[in-house]
Figure 1 (spheres, rainbow, N blue to C red):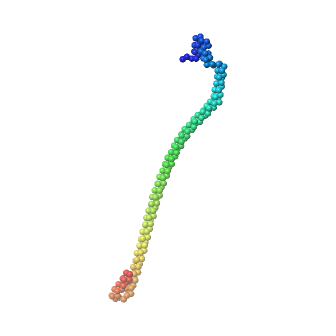
Figure 2 (cartoon, rainbow, N blue to C red):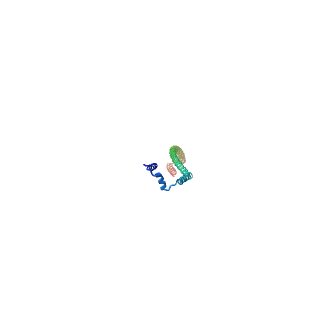
Figure 3 (cartoon, rainbow, N blue to C red):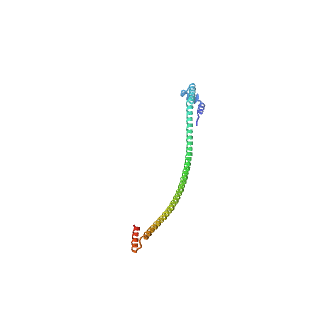
Amino acid sequence: MVSFTSIIFIGSATGESGGVLQRVLRDFHVEWPLLAAQTLNFCVVAYLLYRFAFKPLLAVVGERQRKITDGLQYAEDMRQQLGLVEASRDKTLKEATNEARDIVGAAQKNAEAITRLEHEKLTREMEEAHVRELECIRDERAAMIDASQREVAQIAVELARKILAEPNHKDGRKSFTGRACEEIMQ
């Protein structure tokens, strides 16, 4: 590859007047003081653009890049916290479910125990009431038997008194006995 400086030296070596560089500068009408002023103007404009346009723009882009990075980091942190919260919620829900299951189981056991105790209590009360009723029936039966025996005894005494009060005829006794039986039957 041929460099620009080598072209200058080649032109000098061939004996051309002023070399290739001078010929190019002359052909393109380049004037050194104007080129220096334009170069200085370009450097000033480049500096001013860098200082007042690109530098603040790069600062804004950097700030925006930092905010985006912070936002992504915040989103990742929130995603991790959400995972922890969901895990905690699931754990709490499982604990609550187990506790509810235990409470329901205990309540069922208590209900069964209370039902069994109430059933036993009712059975005892019914047996006691049955025994009392039987005793009451026995007492009433005994009372009825006593009353019946007294009544039969009274009837017998009454009948005997009437028989003894009647004259002693044979025919009279039969008729009296028949009448007394009829009275008793009525």
